[in-house]
Image (cartoon, rainbow, N blue to C red; front, side, top):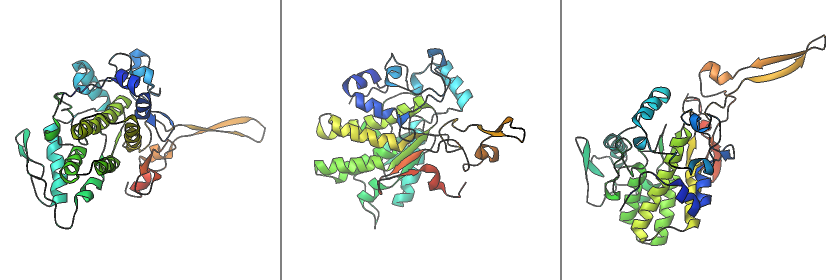
Length: 320
């Protein structure tokens, strides 16, 4: 399978305009996600500007980190602490998650220095657990960048594509379990959608968020084509993109609000002499350095089991 790691947004928009619209949507604000970076200022896009289809289909404006110029990579690392993890390291850490779930090591592969050897045998399930349990088990990648822990179409550091049978992402592993256990084609689609609903991730910068969403969408397409030897319908892709737009969202991981959405609030009041006075008050959460009490916008995500929208911050309770 030929894998183009740099998705052509123009081709996507020409073929499926509704799909790109969904990949740019912020379900909390009901507007499009924002750039949340000054990297595109020279192109006329400011930090708080929304990202629209016409902005991203011009040339190759949205590119994976490995395709960016070295100077730009260094600048983003310095300005935004942007660091990407090689696939072999993602594999090591994902293996730890599965070691805990399966209660044994080397479930999907065996690590070999900075590489891995795929376990070719059908994955045996631990006693008391089913393959559907694994597919539905929730996974979250924080500050996800291009989502290398969730999906592994390519190594985010080298840019080298990875064929499906060697992929190590958390969603990739769910697809392997589905492929090994699901015979009926209709059920395959249902379980694939459940797998998508079980993975979550948040990211600050708008361009990375687009790449993460695209990588998950095209991961689904890769496995679908491998299974059915044809492309999925537009109707199915819209359902997939809708799930992705809810589960992969834009957020400041420290404050748990949309980046730089906290503000100074102004209150107008009048003194005893009838003179207008303006009183400014800052954000309580920012002042206290906590995730609670911010006057910024707290993102909403979807609890698919209850088909209910919830604020991500509510999941944390009083933990932070």
